[in-house]
Length: 542
Ligand code: SF4
Image (cartoon, rainbow, N blue to C red; front, side):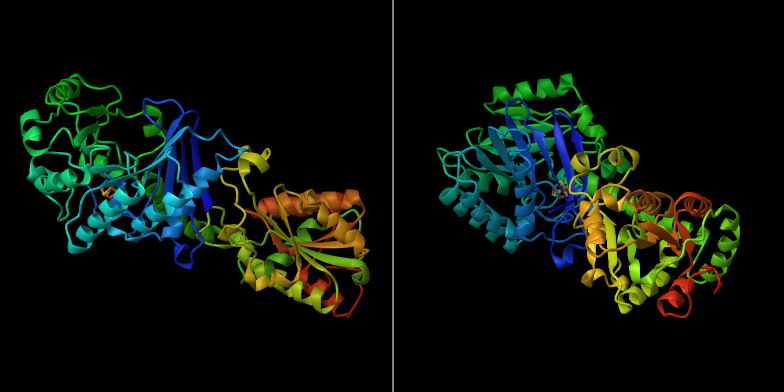
């Protein structure tokens, strides 16, 4: 499970947006989280998604607005294993008790793999300290009828003696109102009552009936007890959380303290023999957008905003693949007065380092998209081929973190978003054919933060390092300065490097040419590698 985003609310919750590795999961993400279980010490709730989005489309839930699709059993298990592994020896202490709620995003009865997961879980977490909990809107179809019958059999066989928790979305005793809130064909309250009565055996937990209630609402105790047996059903009351969908419809009614009418309602139900649990909204969780589907729907909105921003960035880009040659002529003139030395490139002692030409900067859907990186892609590829053809070493660096909180250093507080190892954004552009070359992953600006690079250069007896890639004023600059200090004469290829802006690119070229590096141009380097002439004047072919 690759973590795309995480939000930690200390002492309360950890929210994750992840992407599992399946080929069809490229475009989708899955959200899951751990929260402190209400009213108990050492117990946690693990909220696990069973679908990518939810076709039920409850009016108060953002899960319904997400692109729909079933998750495979392995994608569901990956979320559970991810939360379990974070509680390994290096993380927080293992919880005393886990309520494993297969009900984050998605309707479990619509995904047959939910049952597969329940069977596998009994083997993977056999102890009494992990309780699977399944929450359902009870969609009505022959398929879901089979699902619920099999669920009953699995509960009896694998989770006896109160080791299974089942919850139905009720929300109202008025079927018309229920239909407005849960707009699908579903079991009536009578059908839920019939099934629940069969589901709960003498040693089982009571089935929960969930009611999301605005602060002034109530549940008629007499009507409830006419429908449901308090020996087999218990009541769970929550607010109508402030999901985007609920806010848009004006039905969001979060309450952070239990309102007096809800307390009175609960007292009435208790008098009828029902166990009643009330869960107020946690303000800090609400702020962190912890309600179902919000993390993912926020990510989708961000993706749309990023796409729009990137179109604008492309429009304003200071250089394109079409203008790079003419721009190079201008830049060559503009840095001339700053060059202290005209170092000479000696191919026989040189290697090429292509820096950070990864999807993080090249992909127009990435939050860190830099259109200028596309403008230099062809020149970087030409250099890579020419060096390899000349038998000279080619190295690649790319930037990616295992866990920015642990390996990000100051970068994690400086940059809003850091690339994760294994993510699509960490992939070096295939056009550069990096597979046959040595690559160095780094978590800092300079590739020399990876000790393997210096070792490789020394082993190959490299004395000169030609640098291409991005970004000129950040990682390229850091690499050049480190190379210089380590005794490798750096060269920067001005039209095979790029920055976010022309100002930054030129400023870096000027500074580097003044103190550290020779500035070359792709055509010139190609000619040198082709043996046409020695680089007395690297800008000559321009
Ligand atoms: S509340 Fe549950 S069933 Fe309803 S849309 Fe959200 S995820 Fe689906």
